[in-house]
Image 1 (cartoon, helix red, strand yellow):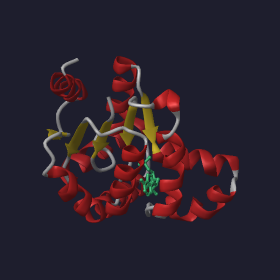
Image 2 (tube, protein in one colour):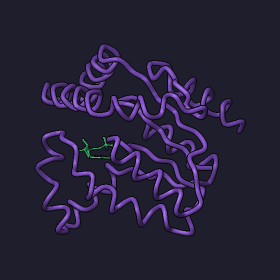
Image 3 (tube, rainbow, N blue to C red):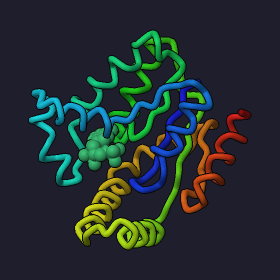
Image 4 (cartoon, protein in one colour):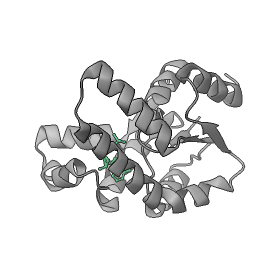
Length: 187
Ligand code: AMP
């Protein structure tokens, strides 16, 4: 079963991806993690993307699409993919369709974890008190939220008309989101 988790930063995609990974014995495919790994390795890609990532901007489609090709064609991961943070642009969504089609796979479920700006602000404020983080954290997150909403609008439109698209209220508790997802998957 291949699943896409879609939604703004702070919606809880990573947490749900980890739950599904355990439950289904699937693989979380987080482009954010993959890109951070490239930076850590100081690879050519890493050097190219570090400024984009630090500014909360999207990395070029070509770079992300190339990283994705290896994952989708990995026989170990076939029909066991949980996309977390990909696709984020229409070009990436179309690329994913092509990659899946040419590897005889499809997307079985799309979950849009929808969370508004106010909820994100409340979450960050709470975390700030608990973890003593700075205001930068709130500002960066809000910038990333705005970029995400603006750039991913066409992707949302692309997926929302599909029969396997499910919108879930990302403001719910983690456990509530998990059980809604599990219900829809029938697991
Ligand atoms: P994330 O961990 O998913 O929040 O991603 C962190 C950062 O990685 C984002 O702010 C982007 O700079 C970059 N990134 C992650 N996934 C993508 C993607 N699919 N397309 C472009 N940039 C991405």
